[in-house]
Image (cartoon, rainbow, N blue to C red):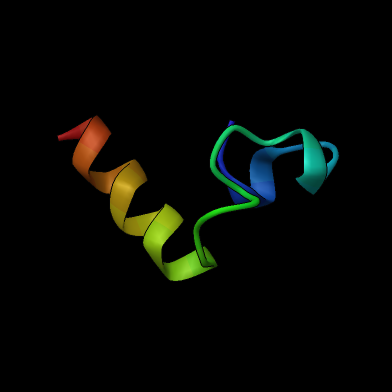
Length: 32
């Protein structure tokens, strides 16, 4: 999961590495 959608931020695949804005951009890229 990404950022806000994660239950625990430490368990996120990218949450520990990316800022929220980067996560949002990545999410939009993946969905496009």
